[in-house]
Each structure stands twice: as structure tokens, then as C-alpha cells.
Length: 484
Image 1 (cartoon, rainbow, N blue to C red):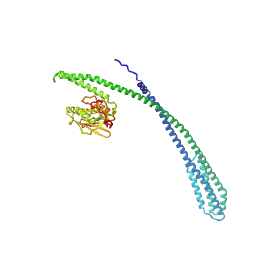
Image 2: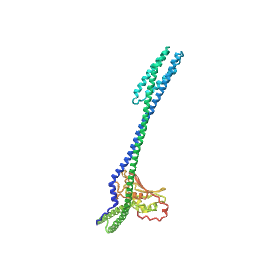
Image 3: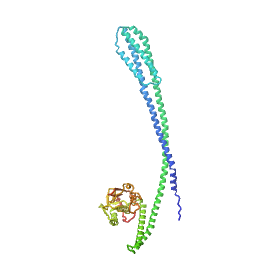
Image 4: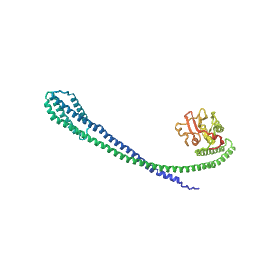
């Protein structure tokens, strides 16, 4: 009977969302990229302008201002030298010799001030002014030496005439050259100050525009991301409801399938058992019936495994509690004969009474899978032994199943709890769902699973489940035969 598939609006929305996802991600990426780029450009521009302002400020602080200071000092020394030289000549004319020490010191101070100035970087047009200052100062030094020589040789009148004529002109020209240099550096200082103010204003305006743009794009990107996240969350909620409904339907369907499949298989298996009793061991018909019976058992084993695995994701029952000692005792009644048949020893190390927060059926399923798995894979070990160990912790109960089998290959350690994972060349029957069921059941109940293995020496499969709460201890416990 053909069934029509109903259109699922949630699935259609999900498909549309997936189709639009590249363009949505591209738009979000573009918005965030523009916002980040604006911030980066703003920061880079601010740093660039700050560097330019620093350079101008350094020029103002280390060139223009010191030049003005040294030139002003040189002018003061010029006036001082002129006065000292005039007094020296007048005293010589009156026959009162005067010490030249103060005059020589003043000349040295003037030379130092001019030398420091001439050693500084030049502004545009300042080099020519340098030359003027140097020439005027050279002429002044020559005439000053002539005056001092005349005084020393006893010609004060000639020295006085030279002071009043040529030397006065030298002082005036040198003073004018120095003053011109001061004015030139003052103009450059004013220009630098104006440039600093202009750079600061321009930097503030550009930074404001870039920061505004970056904030705007960031807000737009956040708004777009919020809209998309809200849509995605709403879609996920809708999908969660649909998945939960489908999970319930799947569980009901799995139960019906298991019942519908296992019921006739049970009848067939019973009929085969009755038929087998009518034939002797060597009868050829008995072999055919035995093969059919084994096929029935394999189908039953497959159906049970698939059903148990499908139900392994169920949520734990509220207030569930399982006494570990009762579950292990119940399993030992069933599995010790299996171990004896395999020539193996199955034993439980003594432990204190404890309970886990899971139903007895869940704990039975987890332990049964681990113990049966350990028994199946003992192989040809020299000592065939499986030991069950219970470790009662403060918040969780840890149960270990240790075997002396060949161990798990390193390549399978990280994936041994995944569905349908089996050792290559495994000779024992199975679907590879037992350990996967253990993992899903344990993690669904807030626990953990793990493995420690040494190739050639054996393995320890362990799981942890939360301890049962004190309130669960007073609730009526379901028997060990309850299914998960």
C-alpha cells in the first residue's frame, strides 16, 4: 500500500534556511568586516596623525625653541662684550690698565652659543641666515682682536677710533644677523604650533567619522546577527518538537515491530525445538532443523539489539533507583553458566551496598552488555577470567568489568563505543551495538564510560552512574526484570 508523504513545513523552512545560509553568512561577515576595518583604519589613522604631531612637536621643542634661546643668549653676550670692550679702551686711554679675563669669558660664551645654534638642524631658508651670522661674527672677532692688539701695544687712541667706527658697525651687523635668525625661528615655531593645532582638529574629525561608521556597522551587524540567531533558535525549537514527536513515534514503532517480529519467531523456534526432539543426533534432517534454529536465534538477536539501541536515547525516569547488588546477583544467575560453558571464570569482588540513579532495567542492560562482551572476546587467552568491580564514590558509582582477553587495538580505542564498530577479523557474532548501547544509556543518565586496555593482557571497560538520591531510597523499586 503506497503512503503519501506529508509536507513538513518545518523541514521546508530548514531547507530554505540552509539554501540562504551562504548569503546570510556573507552579509554578516561583510558587516562585521566593515566594522572591524573601520576600527582598524581609525586606530591606524589616529596613530599616523599622532606620529606627525609628535614629529612637529619634537621639531618645535628640540630645534626652534632651543635655537631662539641660544640666539637670545648670543645677543645678550654681544651687548656685554661691546660694553666690556668700550670700558677696556677708555681705561687704557686714561692710563688705568684693566683685566681682560671677563671680556675673554664673554667672548667664549658668545662663541659657544653661536656654535650650538649652528649645530642644529636647519629650517627652509635658514642656511643662508647661518652664513650671514657666521660672516658677521668672523668680522667682529677680527676687529675685536685688532682693538685688543692696539691697546696692548700702547695705542689706546687708535683703538678708541676703531671701536667707534668699524667695531660699532660689526656689533650692529652681528646683532642684526642674530635677530634675523631669532625672527626666522620664531616664524617656524609659530607655523609648527599652527600645524599641531590643525593636525589635532583634523584627527578628531576624521576619527569621529570613522568611529561613528564602525559603531554603526557594528550595531547593524549585531542586529542582523540577533535576527538570524532568533530565527535559528525558533527553527531549532520547532525542529526539537518535531524530533521529539518523531522519536516517540519511532519508539512506539520499534516496540510494535519488535513484538510483531519476535512473536512469530518465538512460535517458529518452539516448533523447531519440538521437531528436533523427534530426530536422532546423526539424522540429516536434524542438521537442517538446527541450522534453521540458529538462523532464528540470529534474527532474534539482531532484532533485540536494534530495538535496544533505538531505545537507548530515552531520558532517565524521575527518581529512578537500582540496587547494584541485586542487579549483579540476578545477572550472575544467568551468566555464570555461560562463562562455565566457555571455560571462563566469572566472579564479583566484594563491595558495599550502593544504588545508582537509573532504573533496574537500564543498569541490567549496561552490565549485561559489558559482561557478555567481555566473555565473548576472551578468545584463546591462557587465563580466561572476567572480574566485576564496584567502586562507590561520593557522587557516582563506578563499575568496572575487567577481562584477560587480547585487549583492544590502539586504532579502535577512540571509537570502540561507536555503533557498528568491531575488531577487524572478529570471529564472534554480533552487530557492534552492545558498547554503543552502553554509552548511550550511560550518558543519557548523566554518567560516563571509558576503557583502559593493554594489547595482549586484557581490558577494563568501566562506566559511572550518579548515586541514587536519598528520596529515591524510599520509593518502591521496580524488579530487575524491568526493561529499559
